[in-house]
Image (cartoon, rainbow, N blue to C red; front, side):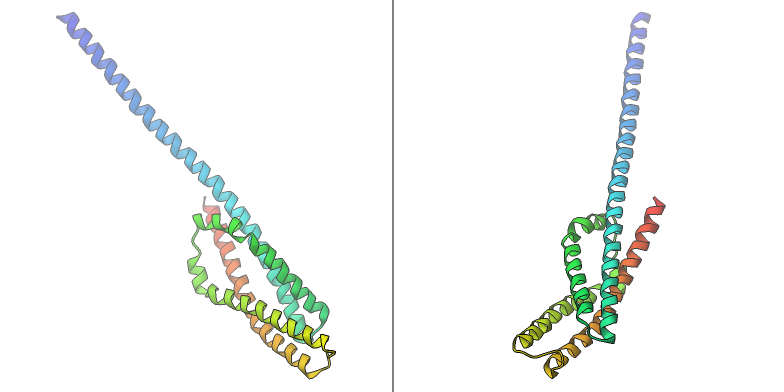
Length: 196
């Protein structure tokens, strides 16, 4: 009987040992999986932040180029400056083609709605789009007048240029808002990233 009790005690002890080993292995694996997930998220977050910061910096540079052209046009209309403004619009178009690919990952990890609503980002975007469309229309009207033989000195072309300059004054304000929003978002990203 003693042998029987020893065998039962040995089996129970082995079972308990196996059970405890399995629990410890399960806990270790769960912890290891958690660490791997955190590592993966960290790498993805880092990649998203790097891409977003790069895109935001390019956007700021593009907006500043637009501002420089707007400031120069406010002083006096000049075809070269206007061409620079049109070139900045083209650059902005190329930049915004990549927006979803570059910026969507950042919105998975961060929320900027407080900054966006603080500066009414929607109104700013709408005014920028309105400006681009209106300037395009005015440019087409000027080209049509040129084709009819009118020159820069004609009242019709001067009137259209005056309209364009009025639009550009408000456009510069919308650009300032966008730069402010982007700057605050970049600051928030840097602060959040340094906490990691």
